[in-house]
Amino acid sequence: MRWSLCRQTHARLRKIVGALGFTHVDPSRIFCVRGYGSTSEAWARIWGLPTLWQQVLGIRPAYVVEIIEPEFSHLPRAEQDRVLIHELLHIPRTFSGAIRPHRTPAFRINRKTVERFYQRYLAGSRRARARPAAGLRLRRPRSTG
Ligand SMILES: [Zn+2]
Image 1 (cartoon, helix red, strand yellow):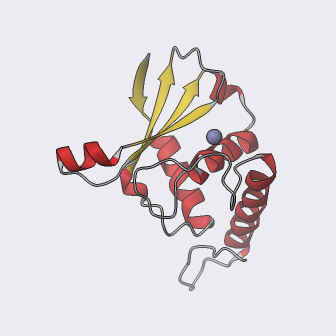
Image 2 (image 1 turned 180 degrees about the vertical axis):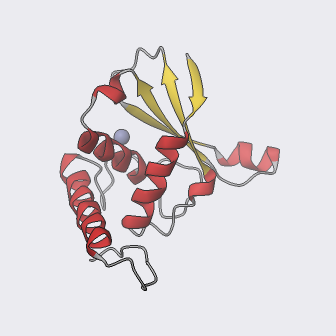
Image 3 (image 1 turned 135 degrees about the horizontal axis):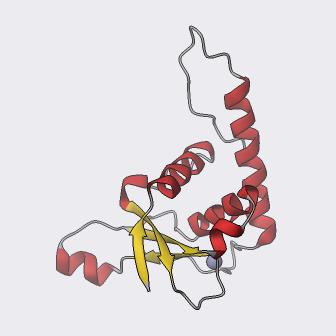
């Protein structure tokens, strides 16, 4: 495996975080990499920094979102956004460095949940585009509901 930091993915993630109003997510503590040479079936993965490592190293929680190439780039853009939303949903409300599992009694990360957030993201982006830019202070689109 080899990895390289990916600014584009980070910018995209930051946009999604803003549009969805994920205030618990600190984009400055998320690192995005492109990974090559993975045998994984996934398009992307998220890695958390375990609490033990945080304490031993004296550093704050952090996450790595790894997109797996070339598979990720072959996806249509909308599907890539869904994949990134899926990975973001693995970050718990506490932003502790832990990974939220796909299935808890209260929450599920599946096609349906991701789609709900994706539609909200699209609605947010549309609102942002529709807003006249001249003479108005642009604000981040807010999530509804
Ligand atoms: Zn997942």
